Length: 255
Length: 104
Image (tube, rainbow over all chains, first blue to last red; front, side, top):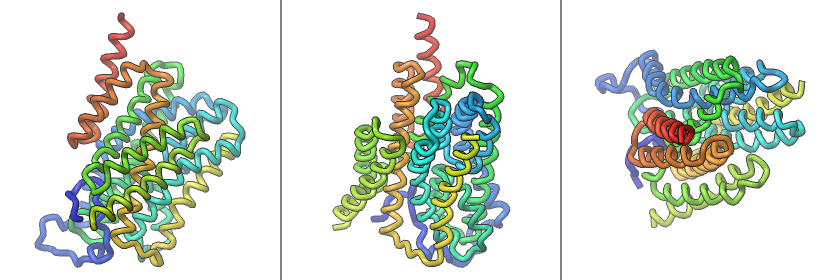
């Protein structure tokens, strides 16, 4: 069951998370260095997401309250949900439909946060609050990657913090750029291609894990079937079916 | 006003989804089997978002450019190339096809 080490490897068991620091090991570094390492590793991911931030900013510039786009950048902190929210509001959808759709899309964050819970076990309420605000696809992926290598809980937290700060800064700056550009330029239309490319880069490495390919196929089929359903329901369906197929194939692999 | 209320509601719900598991972190027992399940569920959600993003992009951009960009992006991601290169090379392929389409 020991799959190859990759961006989606778990390895966040409590025993490993509480391993005492081995000062002789070159990978054991101080928290500040670890935060810088997290920032460095997040930088290419954050830059990949920047065009998507520009698209959201540009879409927000057409709304009645453009500044709410930047506030949503921090409060919602999920590009897909925010883009859906902005587009639906611009199209005149009712408030409750927009809220339910965006919330369904962000429901996956509960899964990410549950998976990351051991990382924040024993930390204070303020730390947990700040950490929770930054749980999103790239931070989750990077935390999974970090958990596959040696280190203490403190170092992993510092790594996460460095990564989250970097992503947030790039995300907000790119949205501000989109707000400034507005929808008048055709550039923002073409930048929409960045999101599927980013997501491809995040999901395809999952094929290396046991049952990973089956999960990807099932999720694509579920999303395609639900494409005309209300926004967010396809994500929910894919999540449920993906987990079920993943559990089934992993069990078969183990047997 | 509607935009602000929507942002506040979605923001509060999103924070709730994220915060609840972290608040219960000391009580949650997540063994490797459950971690794997969460991993599959999370990746499946991201995959569904990928499909939605492709459909969204196809509504506004040139379909041939999108197809080429996704093809290039998929091959690069499949081969384990870093995401920044997937976006840069896939985006360049898209730009090239869009440029050629607009000239012809």
